[in-house]
Length: 325
Image (cartoon, rainbow, N blue to C red; front, side):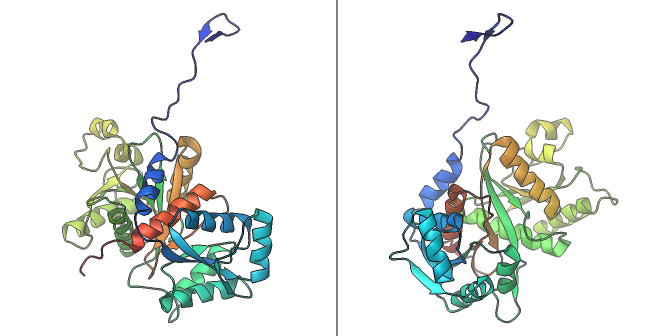
């Protein structure tokens, strides 16, 4: 302890975080390491972060990477990063568009179990994924799920959709939830509690997201969304805080203990996820689901740890038990 300028004794700083940074995601990686690695196509990894992330996931025993892109550019990036591509499968593709097409074709031929975005625009990769006839579409809408380890929350939190669907309709939101529930099951949550967010917790005709939230809950009651407990609409405070829910007399199995937060649109979901990172010290991972295989949709801002954790999600999802249709 020391004295400040007023003569008062200052106390040593106390951390507001009750557990180490990234501890829950680290535990998820450890669980994934008990399973066989999956073959992941890394699309156009022509910069240092892409290569380092893919090779770190390989070294963690999560993936067997196949690097798809211009060989000279990938080798130059490897030299700049101080890493070796010896014993790494490399597939030549002249440019990023061709690399995306090649990765999709390799999935269709059963050569790859997952895809990771490298140094190319998201639109380039996803255009190849969703292309009619030659892409990787299923009967599900494609959506993104963040898995967030916020030290101020008591467990992992899934946030969706913050990256793909800009203004989802009711039917799209149904698929967004189903994708998130599938991922929750893959990481060990048998009946994930799912909060459908809006600005208020009551159904208001002037706020369409509240009406859609109520409809989604009724869809769950009728078996159109299975494997989860849904509640909504819920405002963020009474979704995440039991005390806030009790103050508003909300009786809910979900309020105060959600596993999944479903945002009303991409803008709010993206803002929410990034606030948790920059204001709550959260670590994140994330994948795109709804295609034939999981897709690790990395950002240029993602560090190696995030890329490894996202690879673990893809690996756990690829090995998940398949429910009978």
